[in-house]
Image 1 (cartoon, rainbow, N blue to C red):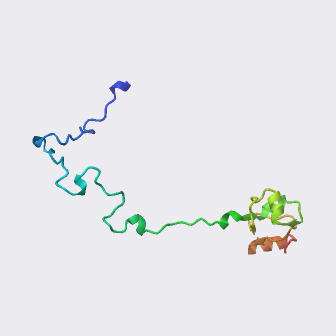
Image 2 (image 1 turned 60 degrees about the horizontal axis):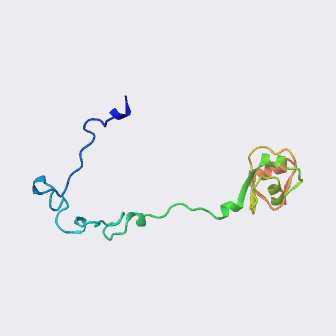
Image 3 (image 1 turned 90 degrees about the vertical axis):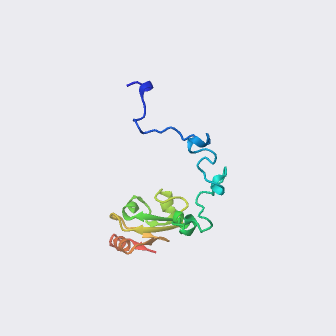
Amino acid sequence: MLLNTIKPAAGSTKPAKRVGRGIGSGSGKTCGRGHKGQKSRSGGMPKIGFEGGQMPIQRRLPKIGFTSAKKKLTAEVRLHELNNLNDEIVTIESLIAANIVPVFTKKVKIISSGELTSAVKLQGISATAGAVKAIEAAGGSLA
C-alpha cells in the first residue's frame, strides 16, 4: 500500500450540498433555510445553550464539589512515621523539621496505622482513639 493510493471506504463520503444554484437544483433561492426568521439569516443562531428564554440546563443544575481552604493546613501522620523521630517530645515544628508534614501545616492528627516502637510525648497534636491506645501502650502520652 502506498500513501497516494489510500482512499476512504466506498460510500463513506458524500459530495457537499451545493446550495443557491437555481430553482432546478432543489435547494436554490432560500438554500434550504425556509422563509424569514432568525435561522434564515446569516449569523442568525442563538448562543450555545440558549433555550428560548427558559433557564438553561447549565444554570438550573447546581454547582458540584468543594475545595476546602483548610485542607492545605492540616496533615495526617501514621504511627510508624513517629519511629523515625529522635525527639522525646513531638510537636508540629519537629514534624516539619523531619519532613514528615509540609511546612505550612497548622494542625496534625496521628492516625492508627503501623506500629509504634518508641515512647513519644505528643504536644499540640491530636490523635484518633486507636492511635491514643497504641501510644499509651508504647509508654507515650498526649499533652
